[in-house]
Length: 317
Ligand SMILES: Nc1ncnc2c1ncn2[C@@H]1O[C@H](COP(=O)(O)OP(=O)(O)OP(=O)(O)O)[C@@H](O)[C@H]1O
Ligand code: SF4
Ligand SMILES: [Mg+2]
Image (cartoon, rainbow, N blue to C red; front, side, top):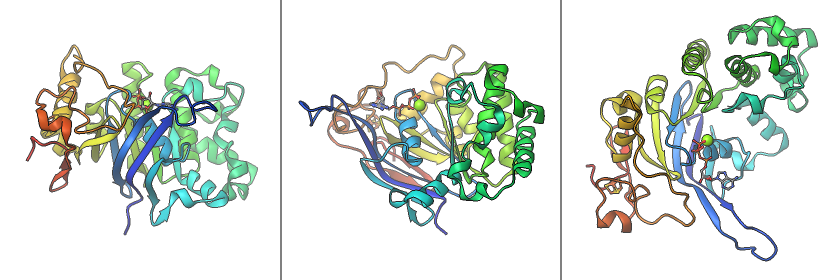
């Protein structure tokens, strides 16, 4: 059986300075040849520092952006070829929960309307009766730890953690098969983060649902996910089952990510993710890698596969 979703050599470049006088302006290369898949009932973590292309990849999946190149397949269908009704149906099956609920929830709408706002676009929902709809919305709110009375309230009346619960409820309302969670706890206090992560775990156990779980925190991803892809400057550096990755990080970047998350002071990795303004030659991590050698700057390492792990580095065999 094909995986739920499979991404092959996905690329996205953003045109900067596009305009009449500069039709061939400069580009930002945000996603550069990304390939991975997510199976049924599987949680896949996409992990990397700020600016490495995680959100762009997720937005490509839901067609908020069109790819510059590459392919996304939903089961056996080409997502780029979906039109109108099929695209609307696809967007019901794949839901996106955003990082910042303060911005992604319309403050003027009641929670009920937020949960049900996809109705006009939905063939399946159109058939549901209003009373039924209200009951379904109440049940989802209970599932995320809120109460049915909250359906009448507006986002401003809730705390940050509660608002994120509403976003999750909105994501779940159409009973998707894939929930994309993009840094959904990073704007919250640490104690609240744990509550929301536990809620996600409960939802995972209760539903047959796949996750694309996006985070900069490799430890959280190792805890929540089945498999993890470590991303740097738009490419995967390493991919492995979470338990294997947690035991041994093979790629120098993965090792540094673990070290920085593990130290009590959260020592950041020296240097920063440089925006790619041209196609990256050689290893994407060469500028910051403690093990760089001349070849790394010249030549792009291919994936080395051992069992379920693949690593893009010349020094790992
Ligand atoms: N709409 C856009 N136009 C131009 N450049 C963009 C756009 N969106 C993202 N970028 C650039 O693409 C790169 C990847 O950004 P992206 O937001 O996907 O990273 P991220 O991994 O989600 O980071 P964060 O952890 O901060 O959310 C960055 O260099 C960013 O500046
Ligand atoms: S290929 Fe070279 S630069 Fe890239 S991670 Fe491996 S050692 Fe470091
Ligand atoms: Mg992001």
